[in-house]
Image 1: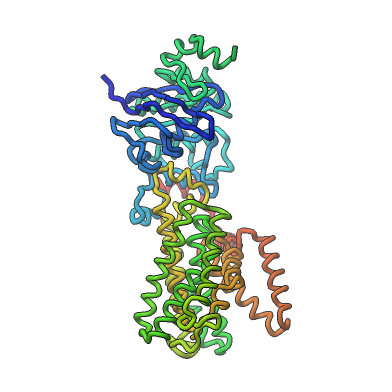
Image 2 (image 1 turned 90 degrees about the vertical axis):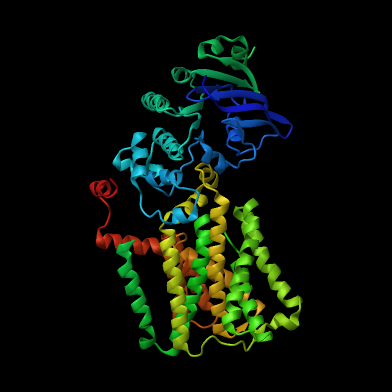
Length: 243
Length: 321
């Protein structure tokens, strides 16, 4: 039996009078890849924000490797092995690609950071592993295409040494070629043992990458199972298409 | 980094020869420029780097100045004790400064820090004026040393030490993290770094530098007053020096401090009274229009043009492979 990596139990988050996430429970096992889908505004990104402690849940618990982590601030959650990308890439604009990756590599320790003077092999290797060439590694984010910015998000996330990756709309704004490249990259990372949760509206690209899918609508879980099972589910069709 | 060392040495040597070349009056201008440079760099390591804009730096400088002034003048504490105590208290003041930074940023943070300065301005006049000297402040403070030349060397030594220290630090990973906080604090947290810890470090460092500058400045002038210290013009001199020189570069604010001080002094014999502030303001605007990132980038661009040190791809590969 595979071990539970992340488990959400009855998560609830209210913004004003609206439930962004309501009584949401699901889990992901080690080595598994999970798709998290649902119509616009169904609470997918909020769920990621809750997992990363960028928002605090009103109710419910989050377990990582069996340990309750609700009290952990964002950076502590990153240290134990959870990391995310953002729907809208958030690069450090005045820094080169390698410097951006370097922020992910850095230890959370002022003295050790003080001794980091020049770009090391590690940043470069990570940059190359997501497909950047030598010239791009020196480029600034404003010179990059959307596909490359998503690659940069991924590189900075991988640099933190995660066990669980949360990928938010990784395919949005990419060309078909870029999607194919990124998919290959994610498949490789999965073979290396990385677990991930992908949020995507691009169901066609998502399907071959995920072992299981969780569908949310209005913050609630409405279906889960294999990709084929959930897209045939009546409730899912209704949520996506309306009645 | 090693490549820059000869330049630092050259700069130190050139600056050290100034007393041989200049009159006492001109030397006093240099001393003032050294202090403005220290204050501008103190502002830069906090506000220039992390983006938490402080409008209250005179609060930190004043805390240092007043503490040492009161201790030495009213309680006859020797300077070698009053100055370190004052710097210590400035660090505590710096941590007070830090609390609003946990919850506010941007304009709100700037206004909170401005309030710190304003409140202190009024408090030193009202609370125990027999100790603080009230609105007239304190005069006849013990001097650290007399004479323009020794004072010049003290201010120069402090300025060089601070400039080199901050420069080296900001060229390390710490500079990268602080800059990243300015660009997107949330993304830094997501990269697994405790931004509060790094921010506190920047605040403490800024307060330390402001404290050192504050006590040296006070015991160079020999007097301190609320209007001289917690004054919006004093604040703007520091801010403009940092901005004209180029924020988040450390060397920029240092250059800016010299540029502004000399501009003002150079204009003095030609343009009487307040008119020179108009010229001074116009020149500042022109610099801002044509070099919005500051003098530092201009000097840097000229420097790289001369050296032709734009790195080639192959060099980059061999250097980092």
